[in-house]
Image: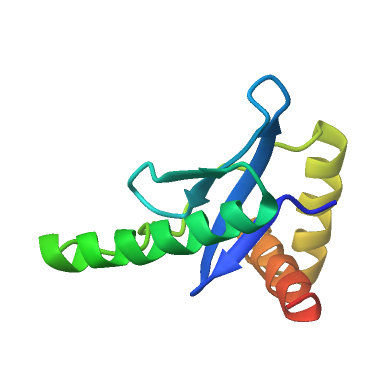
Length: 113
């Protein structure tokens, strides 16, 4: 099961509160906290689209970036054994570990886009 919604290149993660009998969600990949909710899936989808449109309008009105900015740097936590194998493979290939991880990530995204 995939608990995400997409609209205009925005991704919303969704959940359900059995206590409140309510679907809820949050727009991901932006600097602001923007949430939405609905009692039915149809209401949730409509609320998501409405909040995306509102977020875009607000950002344009305030002159700020619509999407989150990414620095191109992130931490990756892996087991010591995997780290060792990857470092050795990179050395054998004559590239840095960073280059090898970048290539693997690019290949994965290309194959699954």
